[in-house]
Image (cartoon, rainbow, N blue to C red):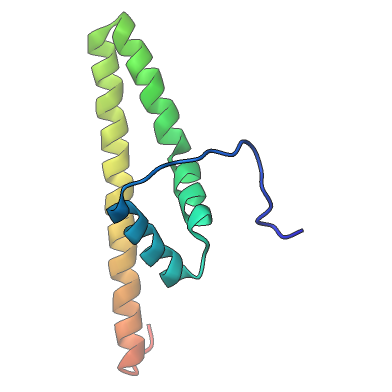
Length: 104
């Protein structure tokens, strides 16, 4: 059995056509089955989902504290996205220098 064997609970989803088109494009671009793409994204989102659930629960007890937690989640997500953007730009510049014959 491959490393892609089923783990956990199976979930069936009905998704809009535009979502399927985007998943198919990502699947084709990465040579990865559609379900594996979705599973990967969901697995990466677990910490955010857990923190969001905790913030919602907290906001039911103390709205101000819940809002504070949500703000922290959004700030962390923004920081991670910004770092990813910087990493991509850095890699792009390295690739361009390499293509032009200038080593990094």
